[in-house]
Image 1 (spheres, rainbow, N blue to C red):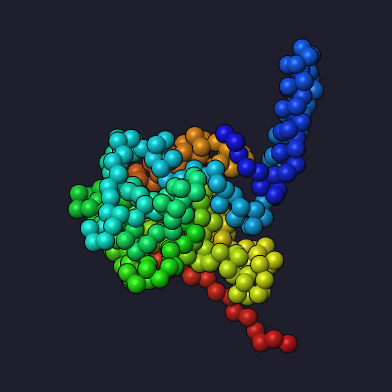
Image 2 (spheres, helix red, strand yellow):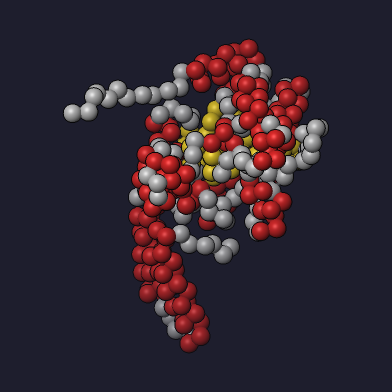
Length: 323
């Protein structure tokens, strides 16, 4: 897989290129460079571990947006079986920015719903870069209620910059569609799990995120606004995006410490975009474990616990008057 390199990966990319060049030289000239290559491979492992053990919040933002990061349909193909995509909101049209349908997880039937971005410009235009219109959220709600009707768990995968802010979307009730999803998800009488697999942007993400358990991949982000948007509002310049990313507390570790999410799912070294299969195994294991914990809870208790979970959220700090 040809993986684009991020700013903090430049040293890694340079060392990888040295290794490839040395391997090519050894092949071309029939030389034994086993010792030299082993030394460089060891150095690469250390360098990669160092780079990924000291990531800043803005580094995580870059990873969450990585164009080679696995999306909902990539996980659907690796974790679930018998996925049958269902289409349309029964009112306006089918929104390709949200996909969903029946699937099996370890033999158990579930409703899988998630944001979907594109891999190239043509697909991104069709999927609107993963930014749903109101009909996308209405489709998602229709599928959740279908799952409730048949007593099946709901699993949502979150990966969006945010809901589409265009005039047409607003005319068709974008805010109402998101608000309705928040209300109806809060009172679903079936187990529900949401996972932030990449970007979790604003209400567009939250519209799939009011669930019994909220999980995040370690290099994903979840925030009310993007660092660039926050920097433009508070500091009047995009140059402050690093400062904004830190202030927003948008990383998985930050949100776990604030008890906004329930678990951080570890990624393979180098990020989920470097090893889709390993990331999928980690996600599948987490989903199976949480579903097992939720399966035996009575519907009325599920709803009560879910409401209490969100009502209890909140943290504040009292600051005295400036000197």
